[in-house]
Length: 110
Image 1: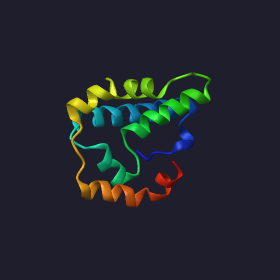
Image 2: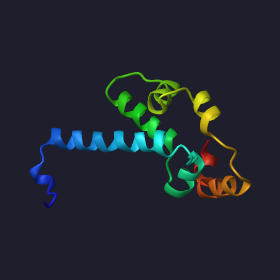
Image 3: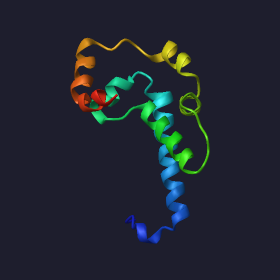
Image 4: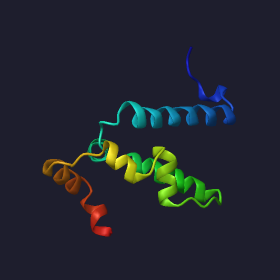
C-alpha cells in the first residue's frame, strides 16, 4: 500500500506522528540506555534533553507552563539525577572534543 498523505486527515496524521514519537522515546529510554546523549548529539545533532525541551516548547506554545526539570522528568520517566546515576557514563575526551567542534557556534552564544 502506497502511503499518500493526502488520504490521511489531520487528526490521523497527528496520531501517527505522536505514536512515532512515543516509540522513539520508549526506544531511547528502555532499549538504548547505553547510547549516551553526547553520542546522539555528535551523530544526530539532538539528544534526549533536546526532545524533552521540544516537548516543553510545544507546551509553552499552548499556554502550558512546563519547567525544564518537569519536562525532562516527563520524558525520561525519572529525574535527571536518577537517569545520570543509572545510565550516564563519563564522556571521553574525544567525544567532548567532537561535541565542542560540532557545536562551537552554539557554545559561544551561551
